[in-house]
Length: 293
Image (spheres, rainbow, N blue to C red):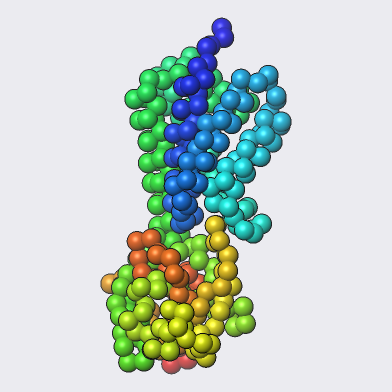
């Protein structure tokens, strides 16, 4: 028995789902985009869902088209600059798609399997508006919970109190371990800490402040380090602080002459981003010091 597909329900459903997919992907990748780009991505997601109305394409062709469509959404929203960034965001977005599809199909099956239709890699669910919204929110919540649990297992969601010292001045704030922070000094190979410009400014000497504010010439204490994120690439100004003290109440870390990169954009939920390698290197140094005592 063939089911009737309402194009308005199909498009609206997929606009909502695409928005939650992008929101989840941004949360996992710790990035964001402008509202207009999110809107464009949601519109494309809704429009691409009309592929369900096309003749049956088979598994391979429908999967290939799905990959191309998801890539178009990614470029519309995040505009990644490097192949590596494209692959990272693409794989994350596609994984989130599979999780959402699985949960939505499961929830739909609990209500009535006759309300679900899958064709050409697109799922159509003839639910009420409230059921659609609730199902989508459940998917979003479940995916975020899974991401948080996996982050805890890998140590990626740990937060710390941090104290940064430079030139006799110190400032305290909150730091988070970001497993996606792979920024390193291309010359020394050292992992680099990333800090919010507004947070670190009070401890910086005047010559660095002038340089960052565009009022000074070249500053000998500043080096430029290349970076690449989901939506941008370029150079970050970097300096060496005198000392950094990090603690979460259980573990303590002390870094001397650590390299700190200054981000002009706000860091979400914290003032400093640490890479897991920085903490791991500090632990190894502690163990080596104990071994030689």
